[in-house]
Amino acid sequence: MSTSTIHDIGYRRYDGPRLGRGYLVRSLYVHNVRAVWGLGRPARAKVMPFLLAAVMVAPAFMDVGAVLLTDRAEVLMRYSAYAIYLQVVVSIFVASQAPVLASRELRFHVVPLYFSRPIAPLPFVLAKFAAMVTALLTMTAVPVVVLYVGGLIAKVPHPLTHLREFLLALVGCALFALVIGALGMAVAVLTPRRGFGVAAVIAVFLLSSAVVLLVQNIAEFRTNFSLAGNAGYFAPFNLVDIVQVRLLGAERTAEAVPDGFISGVLALLLCAALVGGAVAVLYRRFRKAGLS
Amino acid sequence: MPIIAAQGLTMRFPRVTALDRLDVSVEAGVVGLVGANGAGKSTLIKILLGLLPPTEGRASVLGLDIAREGAAIRERVGFMPEYDCLPPDVSATEFVVHMARMCGLPPPAARERAADVLRHVGLYEERYRPIGGYSTGMKQKVKLAQALVHDPQLVFLDEPTNGLDPAGRDEMLALIRRIGSEFGISVLVTSHLLGELERVCDHVVIIDGGKLLRSQAVESFTAVSGVLTVEVQDGRDALGEHLHAQGVAVRPEGRVLVVDIAGERTYDLIRDGVADLGLHLVRLEQRRHHIEDVFTS
Image (tube, rainbow over all chains, first blue to last red; front, side):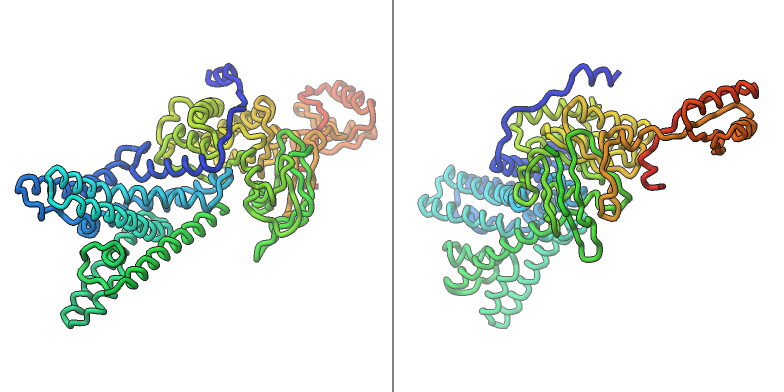
C-alpha cells in the first residue's frame, strides 16, 4: 500500500532559490541557540536550562522586592557583582549546556553531514560559540536588567549614575559570556563523554574560583596584597572582575584585584587569548571530526 | 560530460596508500563503486567532495574542479555516510528540515522538501518521533533523505545496505534504482556485495588496493557466456556420459551439468539425449557472467 502512495506523489525537482553562506551561518546559529535551551527537543532537555535561568533571575526579583518594600536604595545589588555572586549557577549552566553544543554532534558523528554541505569548519564553530555566548549573555544580563528596571520603579537616587553603571555592567556581562562560554566550550569539546564533560567544566570553574579565593585569603592574612591581587588572573570570574574594576570603573566584587590600569589591560588581553584559544581548539576538533 | 573524472588521483597517508594513480571517468546514471574493505572507496568519496586534498592528481565532479570548487560541488551533491550519523533526540522531520537549510533552502522550501523526501524514502507518521527509537532500516532511510533533501544532481551513497535485513535491503536497492531512473539524480553507490550492484547499477567501477581494476557497463560484465546449464531429475551422470560419447565437452557441477556450446547442434544433442534416456528436463539456460567473476578469474 505504501509503495503505491509513493508512486502517486512522483518526484518533484527543486528549482527555487538556494541562499548563500550568511543564511547558512544564521540558520546554524538559530539551530544552536534552540539546542542550548532544549527547544525542538523532548521536555527533559528543557528542564535544566530553564530551571537554571529561573534560579539565576530569582534573586534579582527578590532584591527588587526588598528595595520596594523597605524603600532603601542601598539594598539594590551592584549590577557588576551579580554574575560573580551567582557564579555557581552560571557554572552549572555552562557545564550542563556546553556539551549539548560542543560534544553532542561529535558523539553521534553528525559533523561530516555539515562539512559535506557548503558550510566550512570556521563559520560552523563560530555559530556554535556565538550561540553559547548568547545563552550566557541572556543568563547574566536579564537579571541586571531586572535590577535596573526595579531600581527605576523604586526611584533610586542618582538615576544617571545608575544608568552609567547599568550600561557598563552590560559590557561586563558580555565579557563574562565570552570568557565563560569560551572556556566551557573548549573543555566540553575535549571531553566528548557527556558525564565527564559536565564534571570537567564544573571543576574548571568552581575549583579555580575556590583555589584563587583560598590563595587570596592566605595572602591577605600575610599582608602580601600584590599576590592576593595577581591570583585573580587564574580564575575566569575573577579575571573578568579585574577588567570591570580597572577598565570599566566598577567596584571590586572579588576578594582582591591587582592595582593599576595596566592590570586591567592585561586581564582583557588574557580574556581575548582565552576566547581565541577556545575557538582554535573548537576549530581543530570539529575539522578533524568532519573528515573522519 | 562525465559526472566524475579523475586523472592520476593518489592519496597517501603516513602508513598506507589509499589511492594509487587512479584514472577513471564516469557518465551519468547509477554507478557502483566496488572494492574490498579498505580499498579506498570512502577516501575517494571524501576527495570527490573536496574535503580531503589528494596527494597528487586531479579530479572533477559535475565538471567542477575538486581543488578549486569544493564548495560549489558540495552545493550540488548529496552524501550518505556509511556509519551512524544521526542525533537520537530530534525527530526525522526536524533533522531533515535542518539539513535542507544547511544547503541554503529557505525555511518554507526546506519544510516542504523534507516532507516530500521523507515520504519518498518511505517514512510516514514515525517521522515525528525522535530518531533514537528507530530501527536500522528507518535510520538508513533518514540518512538517505538528508542526502536527497536539497535535490542534488549527484548523490554519494556509502554502503547504504549495511546492517539491513533482506527485505530492507531489497527496499533500499529499489529506492536507489528509482533515484537514478525516476528522480533523475545520478548515484555513486559503494558496496562490497557485488550481486547488489549488479541489480541496480548501469556501470561499475572496481578498485582494489587503491588502483582501478575495471570500469565498465554492468551489461558487459553480465554478458551471456559460452556455456549452458542443464538440470535434469535423477539422471545427471547418465546424461553426462551420453553427451560425452557424442563428443560434447561436459562437466558436472553440483546438481547440474555445464555444457560448452559448440553451435546449434549442442542444443539438439542435449534435447535428443534427454528424450532418449527418458529424463525429466528441469532447466536449460545459457549462463551469464557475474561481476564476481572479475575477482575469481
